[in-house]
Image 1 (cartoon, rainbow, N blue to C red):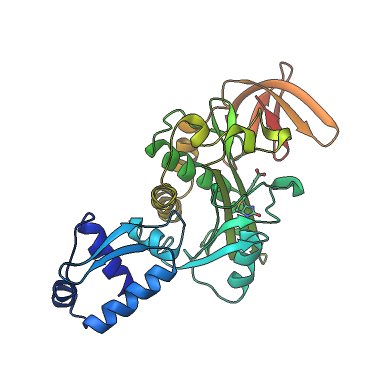
Image 2 (cartoon, protein in one colour):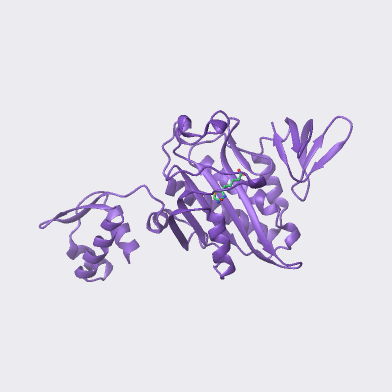
Length: 319
Ligand code: BTN
């Protein structure tokens, strides 16, 4: 009911609405409305009240609370159940914990801040308070475990499309799963899985998107190579961005589950900024250069070194 009340105020566009009117329209007592407004105030919403005119909503906090996310969401299942934390070590770790306890598919864990966010190859991932979207999505797909790595491709497609929808039309995917904007990293994705030989128990899609960081706020090591929406001139609504990404992810995931991965691979290729480029492949202490010519049906990158074509399964690729 609290969501519906909030929605009612949003639709009123900052105009006053009387308690009597809300009570009539939403079939809820005026005392209940008053109690819900009290809770909303405690969560950072600001209402102006007038004994004659009722209430009006004048400020909604820029936080990714379940209420805020719900107000923007257009999905069937993704993001319909939210575990919200002001601060946590890593949303992936939280997501794994609740997935083991049986959390349903589509559940997301969102944090305003991560104190121990991590990326691929055990690298740290900088996740300051409310300056990005740091979240993990729980999936329980029917794929065979050997197909799970392709979920990483799927994640990159959903995130890239969501980012484009919110204004950064040139965002593209760097193999395997970074999203770049004009050559700078804006998103990191870490997909983790728990499976037996024949069945996936769960997949955690961990996604970190830089939204509100100014250039000077990035750690020095990433200042020249990373970017954010704000840095690119867009003061993006985090909840709208999250909702757009979840909608795109849900669509792509549904397609992969029903039709297989062929179309996912095609979609990935159209959004890729790696294919057709001269790249350096770094794997441990080894490195070589070549032209990224394609990805194969497992999502591995094919690099033509001039003498032969290598199949890159893991590692880092720089453009
Ligand atoms: C990478 O760049 O190597 C991947 C970074 C993935 C970061 C996200 S933020 C949400 C989730 N929680 C984590 O600890 N990692 C992922």
